[in-house]
Length: 311
Image 1 (cartoon, rainbow, N blue to C red):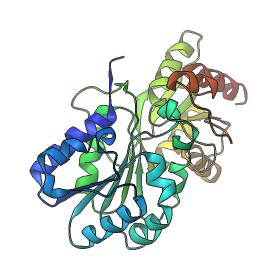
Image 2: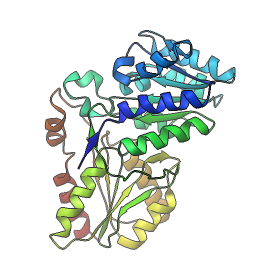
Image 3: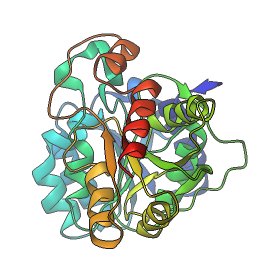
């Protein structure tokens, strides 16, 4: 598969949006060369604000700008944009439901050598817990651009998680993103893998391997965690009778928890979960960490075999 960087796509898309709408402003926390908001800063210096290493203050400034009618994009690494400023996210953005878009790069453990302190693996649970927030994890750069455009046009607080490394392209040019509507990437009858972010490409790879073994596996990209496409979950459970959820996140509070809530209430079926479990990862190269902590196509393959046996 060809690869592209979601964070580089973010920078380019911001500039495109900035040219279209003078009310778009961008804030960063001294990381703009890495989050790629530096591209926006060069073209629109009067609409870019570097807040320094003060993420809490940055969210407060964003709230003020949004209350004044601006469409505010806020960026930092995912770990800082979630854990460090959670109280401000809750009080300043969630409760007043302000029009601020948190677009965070360097999500998950694919941050790699930056180490445990920089691995954002609790972020989805935190943002999904905040009333009013829309939570999106694009599967590739094409979907990232689409999601960012939708966030700019939809009122309310958003969290969009992007990656550090280049990731596989799973969509063709011209793909249309619909907020809150899951995408069936591959049809199947024996089991369904519901994946998000970088795990979508790995789920497709696993489905190809399983097909050669006689197991027909459906793959769904649940790009929007909140609001969750519950109808797609119930349909998958009804049609295939078994679900595996794959995400680059802790076991608690992310996509797996949200899908399990839906199946438990609407259509109980056997389930398996491919995630980090209840542990922090070590420092290392991204691919080595994914292998060490069970986030590979092989891990999805084994989980599908296990859940099919339980049908």
